[in-house]
Image 1 (tube, rainbow over the protein chains, first blue to last red):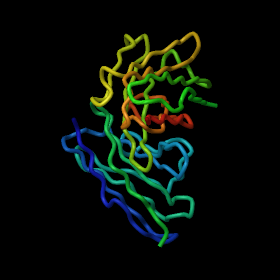
Image 2 (image 1 turned 180 degrees about the vertical axis):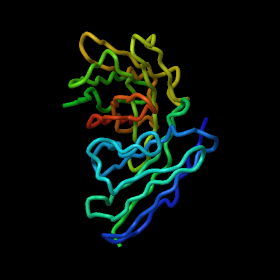
Image 3 (image 1 turned 30 degrees about the vertical axis):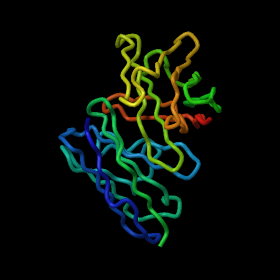
Image 4 (image 1 turned 120 degrees about the vertical axis):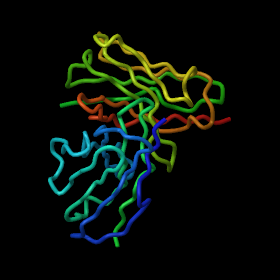
Length: 107
Length: 121
């Protein structure tokens, strides 16, 4: 199975900050990497698919990059509504697996 | 508008069974790959399994913890996805989400609101 590891597990940031979350796969997954945002009590929402493609309706301050084993999710200017938990997920091979999540909190 | 509405959750004793349903609308269900994802209370996301479209032979795949106990099926005439859960364990307690698997890189494009399954004696 492919293991996904996110860092950091949590971070504190202020509105307007640039935030970067990293995700590492235990083996190459090409660009089969997706990012989700989950707010308390809600279902996750797809932000980025295929490592760098922005899902329709997602603000352009979100961006993704990477290929192979190392990926990043960036938020260029953190907004109040962005405080949430973010998950990466590989869809290269089953079993599809998620990272453990990164909680973005208000500083 | 894409909608996925799960139902069938509830409380069950260890060893019991439960069947979850997910009614889909707003997209071509019969051509879609579908998946179940679960989340134990306070924990991260865990993929449960997927079913491909009939045109892709309707193949199913499962995560190791549920293989042999859970079965995913679909009724394209009713636009409904199912998750039959047998031999339930306490560690199966979770919110279960139905998801539509998108093309290209197979992301979970859309999610239902979830249905809670509690396994407890």
